[in-house]
Amino acid sequence: PPVGEKYEYQAEVSRLMDLIVNSLYRNKEVFLRELISNASDALDKLRFLSVTEPELLKDAVDLDIRIQTDKDNGIVAITDSGIGMTRQELIDCLGTIAQSGTAKFLKALKDSKDAGSDNNLIGQFGVGFYSAFLVSERIVVSTKSPKSDKQYVWEGEASASSYTIREETDPQNLIPRGTRLTLYLKRDDKGFADPERVQKLVKNYSQFVSFPIYTWQEKGYTKEVEIDEDPAEAKKDEQNATSEKKKKTKTVVERYWDWDLTNETKQIWLRNPKEVSAEEYNEFYKKTFDECLEPFAYSHFTTEGEVEFRSVLYIPSIAHSGKDDIVNPKTKNIRLYVKRVFIQDDFDGELFPRYLSFVKGVVDSNDLPLNVSREILQESQIVQIMRKRLVQKAFDMILWISMSENKEDYEKFWDNFGRYLKLGCIDDRENHKRIAPLLRFFSSQSEEEMISLDEYVENMKPEQKGIYYIAADSVTSARSAPFLERLLQKDLQVLYLVDPIDEVAVQNLKSYKDKNFVDISKEDLDIGDKNEEKEKVIKQEFGQTCDWIKKRLGDKVGSVQISNRLSSSPCVLVAGKFGYSANMERLMKSQTV
Ligand code: ADP
Ligand code: MG
Image (cartoon, rainbow, N blue to C red; front, side, top):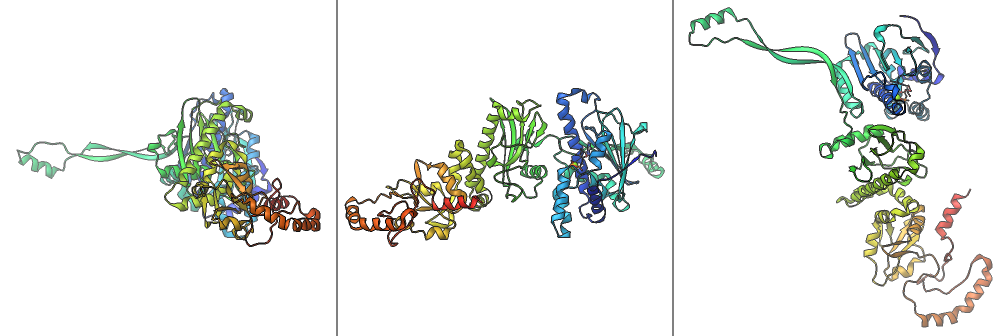
């Protein structure tokens, strides 16, 4: 073969290749998933660009992925008709690590001291293109970009520190557009060239790739063929005059090779929900969002009318600490398609409010322009309506979990995502009515199990005006607050707000079912037991004492007053009506460095 120009890999690539060849060996089969996902990305890119540059599609080839195997020689060839790569792109993409997934993998590997975890990491992040070296001795990438007149060949070997690039000269190898990867498998990995094995892996890993994936398979059909009669039998027949003369046939299987469509290409959200099984929804979720656990709930819906879109939304079963930053989420949680073309998954609250960033899903719109930009997203009336519907559906799902027969379901949800909803109280005034019934708090009458605001309101005394709460850093410290005494004595329930964000959330809500939230640590607390006569007498008796205490404490307190809020403690420090509560003050202090 003609010799190409030689290039050295970037140092990180060499390190990665070393690792791949020497230590990541248990999860080898992921290479196929990685290569198919690259092919699918390349097709997505082409389809996306062709919206504004239709001439990119001038070489009328179908957008698909084809995998051909040569079992005897241990060769696998994966061909896509996607965007391809120019010579420079070959150098940039296959000689350096620019890509975040692979970079993340390397970082995670560096962070983890436990050598045994390598193989889990590869499952989590994937090592992209280089994973092909898990099974290949040599890889040849022949690629044709519509931006270039020429087709180029990249060639690399496992455990070599350099690769070569040359122009494709063999007319047999020319392709109109796209990329063909040819893997020459290592001796022990030739099994991956078994067409049936490849078929199985494709079905397993790439079920939801939206382009058709064909694998080259041996097929067969049966046919009847006449057979020559056994002479002895024929003689018998002749003697037996009554028996009818019948031609003998046998069934044979005719074998041939052909492309076999191996994946389901109708995207799940385009299918009729009645025909999609729970397993399919769960699989789709896991494959699309790189999750290993099944989702908690999903919702598949279509809206018609002023805007038309289809969507499948999911609530994950656990929150990812670290990955989902609650205040500044950068999760790729919603995948937007326009008329089946993948557009983007990198939003910042345009399609879904940030506080709901834990909800994942796909949205396919027929109304948005294909070249939708961030600016369009921000201003579009259509997007506004879509956003509203999506939020509504997300809340329906959460409500549905909260009404589950099994109480643990919602407890689990709340454990994971409760804080997001509280953030919603602050961020999304418009949806207070939806969020408030979903909130849960401990209370003076329920210290072990959280209650809902509905439960609180149902349990209110007839004369009780507000929803009482006290903010503290734990149930124990809430329970021992002196403010509580009189309320407990009167059998009034008090919510314990023990999460730092609770108090702000409740203050943003202001009220629930026309009952105001009342902080029992503030002055002026009226629990409906005023006795003016008695107060007058007491004021006379202790007025001077108060003045004296105020004089002694000076500016340290705002005022010293007689209170009817205590039953056994002699005095209590309370926050001013317009001041911060003690808990808020603690919070504020912890925020300022
Ligand atoms: P990632 O896919 O996460 O970006 P990979 O290591 O899998 O990382 O691939 C590196 C880059 O190589 C891709 O981003 C892409 O630009 C390019 N590439 C890989 N395979 C193909 C392909 N089949 N067609 C076009 N470009 C490809
Ligand atoms: Mg990739």
